[in-house]
Image (cartoon, rainbow, N blue to C red):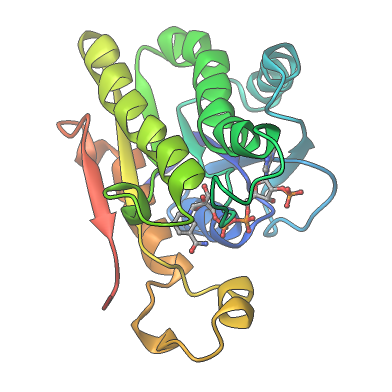
Length: 227
Ligand SMILES: NC(=O)c1ccc[n+]([C@@H]2O[C@H](COP(=O)([O-])OP(=O)(O)OC[C@H]3O[C@@H](n4cnc5c(N)ncnc54)[C@H](OP(=O)(O)O)[C@@H]3O)[C@@H](O)[C@H]2O)c1
């Protein structure tokens, strides 16, 4: 599952999972364009770009810079996203709900749309999205999040079908609660050793980005550690 010379765009690359995906791609010989909001650290060897994935124009401009610098783009890992627990009853207004839709599904669709011409120019490529086990079945307080991540999962299947004759695969990993400092702080009494580690998810994403996964498309792969 080596990624030698492959140019991989990682969104949300300053976050917990994104940083590990960037590290794993570099460890497998790939080149990393790390996209995120604001400023943040990226592993040595990765090149960072600041962009708000809410804007298709800005994302397209940044990807043109990435292709100019590295010569091509071979793959996209859509890691940007986030979580908020909120019940419909207690939500002050519906903007709180649509915000999660934009954060999870919107960023994924925008980056996929922007990268498509570059993958087509390369003669094929890989898109890997991040869904969530928490979106397989809804639960109280999870409505907006589960709906947005279920959107990512259906979008993954649809885009995989749309692109299957172009040698562009589209898959998603479905993590359960990830062992991050933020989750440990929010759930201090949980069994942290059972949670899936960011590095473990990153390895599955790297596999899906590699030649070894050429025949896998439209898959939604649970990555759940010991939960
Ligand atoms: N953590 C979990 O337990 C868990 C479980 C299942 C699935 N997931 C999914 O896994 C992915 C990574 O999670 P994580 O815990 O690593 O999250 P994280 O640490 O919050 O990282 C997400 C990154 O995405 C960035 N981002 C958000 N909106 C953006 C935009 N419009 N344009 C560019 N960058 C943007 C964030 O920037 P800012 O911080 O500046 O907003 C942040 O750096 C997410 O899609 C999440 O939904 C996480």
